[in-house]
Length: 88
Image 1 (cartoon, rainbow, N blue to C red):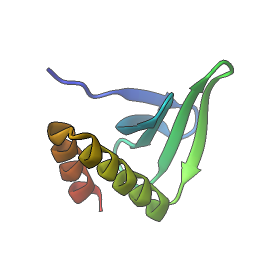
Image 2 (image 1 turned 180 degrees about the vertical axis):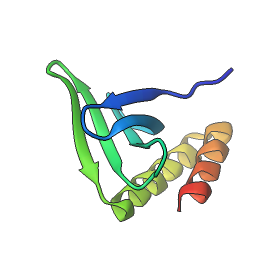
Image 3 (image 1 turned 90 degrees about the horizontal axis):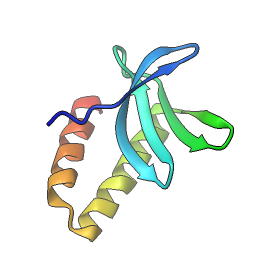
Image 4 (image 1 turned 120 degrees about the horizontal axis):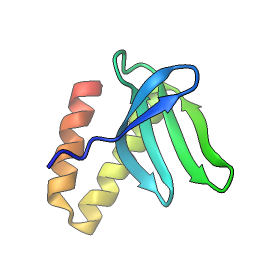
């Protein structure tokens, strides 16, 4: 089953989800260039886009990898590890 999630940003176009990073928060990047990163928060006001630098996005992914390792979700950890290697 394919669980890719896409989102349309009003300025930067199509984004795809890299990983969830917390309750109602996910890390997204631009689909084609993978140079712009956003933390997207779902709230009562709708979607909130918080831009991130490439270094900050890498830190967010590494923190998520640590969380997955601690919780024992080996399959999710392996998938995110592959994504991290491709992006950075």
